[in-house]
Image 1 (spheres, rainbow, N blue to C red):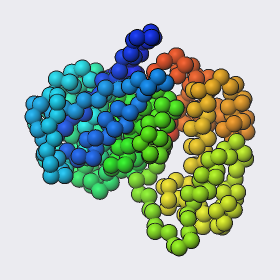
Image 2: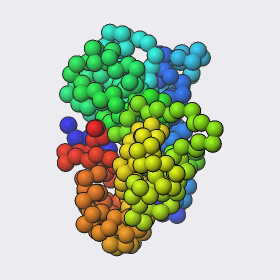
Image 3: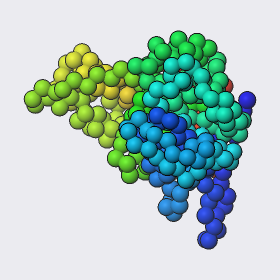
Image 4: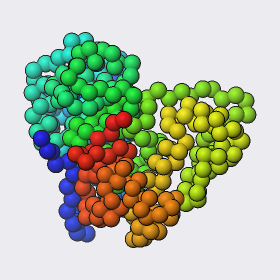
Length: 356
C-alpha cells in the first residue's frame, strides 16, 4: 500500500495561510502523559519562514471522553475519533498496561479505527504505542521498534513483526515507530525534517532546547557513566569537531583534542553517544550537506567541500548511501515543495526505512 505522506502546500498570497498538515493524537486508557504532549510540543512548534504553523495537532479519544493517564491524572480532549478520518498523520503515544500489552489485542472499535486511518494517513507510535499498532495488525511483516525493556513481551505476542529493539526509531514509510520517551522526540524531529527539511527541524529543536538530530539507527543501549572530577567526556570535542566539519578530521585528531588515547576516546565516545566517532562524524557531515543543499544555491562541489567530503563523488556516495538519492535530486525535492524524502540514516531503494 502506498500512502501519500507529503505535506500539502499552496502558493500563499499575502493574506492566505498555508494548508496545515492534520495530525491526530490518540489518547488511550493508561496513556503516558509525557508522550501524549510530544506531538503538540514539537510538531505544533514547526513554522515556516513567516512563523505560520505547518501542522495542526489535535488530541482525541475514540468517544471524546476523558481518559486516565499513567501519571495518575485524567485528560479531557476536545475531540473524538472522528478526527482520525481527516488526519494525515495519526500518533499513538505509549500506554502502560491494558490488553494490548498483556494479550496482544485491542477492542474491535479501536482496531477498526486504526486500520481505517492507515488507508489514508501515516501512523506513528511512541514507545509502547507499538503494542497498540501491532494489536491492530498494522505491523505484521514490517520492521518496528519499541522500548527495549518490553521487547521480550512484544516478540512473544507479535512474532510476525520484525522487531529491532536496538534502534531509536524505525521509519517504514507510512508506519513509523520509536523507542522510549526521548526517542519520541527524535521521531517527531525526524518527521519535521522529512516533511520540511533540516532548517525547519533545527528551528523546532532549538525552540525546545533538544538535540536537532540523533540517528534513528543509534542504539538504545547508551551508557552514560557519571564523569570523574575534571572529566568532561567527549562533549567538548564533539562541539569542537562540529565547527570544523570542512577540515580533514581524523580519529587521531579527535582523540588528541580530547587528550585521550585513540582507544580510550573511542570507548568513551561510544559509551556517551552509542555510535563510533567516525560514524558520528559522517552523520554530522551528511546533515550539514543536506542543510546546505536545502538552503543555499551553492554548487555540489562547494557543498561537498564545506561539509568535509573530499570530492563531489564522495558526497554523492555518502548521500546516496544515507538517504538513497543524489545531491541534485535531494535539492530538487525540497526546492519543489514539501515532498517525503527517504530517511536520513540508512536509506533503502524501496522507501524510507530506518533499521540497522
